[in-house]
Structures are given as structure tokens and as C-alpha cells.
Image (cartoon, rainbow, N blue to C red; front, side, top):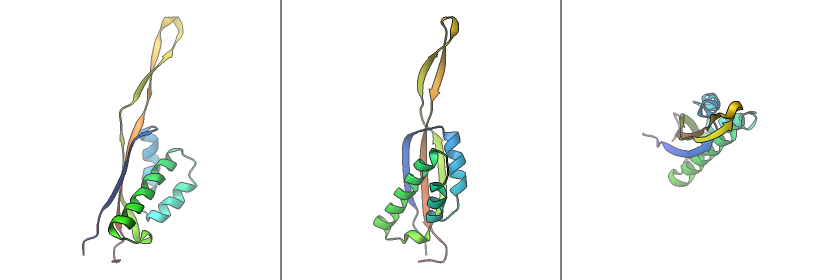
Length: 117
């Protein structure tokens, strides 16, 4: 029996993709509920954004496919770089330096744990 792949994504999330990838690597392959518990106690700011996308994917699974939330597993989670805002920081001697305020695209794919149907 083929299980459904449930997707959710968040685009243009403020924060560096590199920092968000550190959080995403911690929850890849874990159960969805276990991942939310782990993210709840992480000190990183990106943990809230990743948890929000996982919760959205869990809600999609329950509403659209009738899946049980306890059987869901994080199959893939990707954090890609989005466009960034260019800002100036004024420097000495009449110069300015470029500041890049980075953003991320976070996408999650959940599937049911093997052996449940």
C-alpha cells in the first residue's frame, strides 16, 4: 500500500538559511510529534519557524488525507535560500558597507510510518 506524501512550505522566512539548516538537520527522519517536542526546547530562533511548518504539514495530513498525527514521520525537510534585502551600513571616511538581510524557504514532506495503515 502506498502512503501519501504530505507537503507544507513557508516562503521568505526571515533568518539565515545556514542557521535554519542546523535546526532542520536535527529533526530529519524523526516522528512529527517527537520533532515538535525537540524544537520546543531548542534555543534557536529558527526552531519556531521550522515547528510552524511541521505543524502545518500535520494539519494537512489530518484534514486532507485522514492520517493519524502519531504515525507521521519527517521524510524530507529542506531549507533553501531566498532573496535577501540589501541594506547599507555607513563606514568611516565616507564609505558604506553592504549588509545582506537573508531569508529562507522552508519545505517539509511528511509520510506515514512503515507498518501502519
